[in-house]
Image (cartoon, rainbow, N blue to C red; front, side):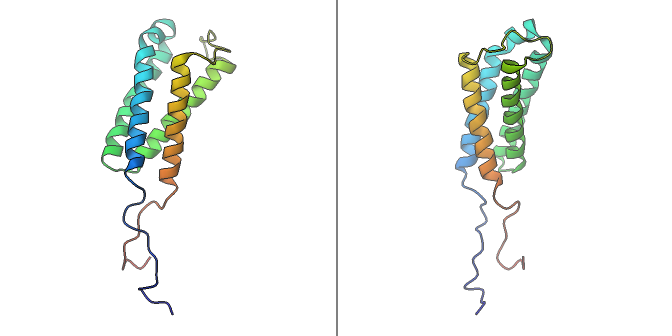
Length: 142
């Protein structure tokens, strides 16, 4: 017996709205950490200062998308957070071009907060994106 009454279909909501809210909080934290460190980076290594500005703007764009419940916000948030996490790790291991002063400096307070926030945003984005891209609606035949 394969009737419509026994068919289980996902609800129209792919994930609870708490994913957006927590990801937005994480993005605000990431942006804030980089705002606090921005003036020093622009003076020390200008290209990193401009990268920080791009990251902050990207966080703002992801927040707007997430506030509109647009899945692309999770793609942007997760990508930005993962790239920033990787950049931090590179700056502490091999160093970055013209920026080797932080090699081995894993315990800088702002850096540790940044890693925690970035890891949380990556995890939240991955969890939110692990569901179907578009919810199925009853009667759609798919």
